Amino acid sequence: MTEPLDIGPLVVWAAGASTLISLGTTVFAWLTAGSRKNDARLDKLGVRVDELEREVQTHGDKIDQLPNQEMMHRLELSLVRMEGHIDRMDERLKPVAAIAERMQELMLEQAKEGRK
Image 1 (cartoon, one colour):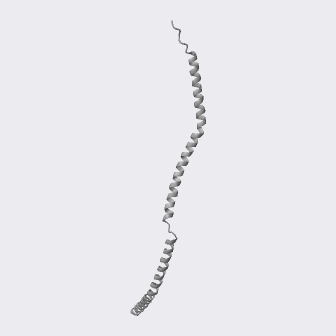
Image 2 (cartoon, rainbow, N blue to C red; image 1 turned 120 degrees about the horizontal axis):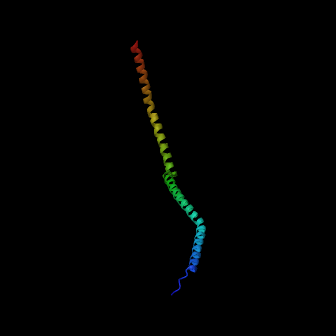
Image 3 (cartoon, rainbow, N blue to C red; image 1 turned 135 degrees about the vertical axis):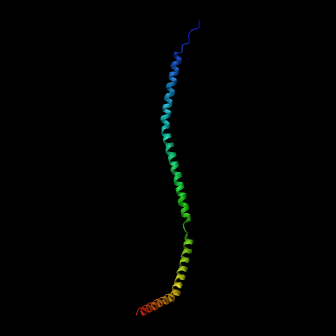
């Protein structure tokens, strides 16, 4: 008859290999733990950079819409012209105001005479 197969040494080798694999996995996890933390930090920083880029773009768009030096100069010139027009209108309206004042005085005098 054949002799029974002795698996004792095979079990010892399997247990040793299992222990080595477990130890290797533990060491690998320990060595890569910092890397995983850094990956998480980099992901958070990436999100923050994206938010800041959007914010900078928004502010850049707002700044682009602000008047530049040439536009401000044109506005100043327009205001000066408007002041001139208003001054001319003021001079033209003074006689009208004087007429209105005289008419009011006349109406008051007529009202006083009517009461008497």
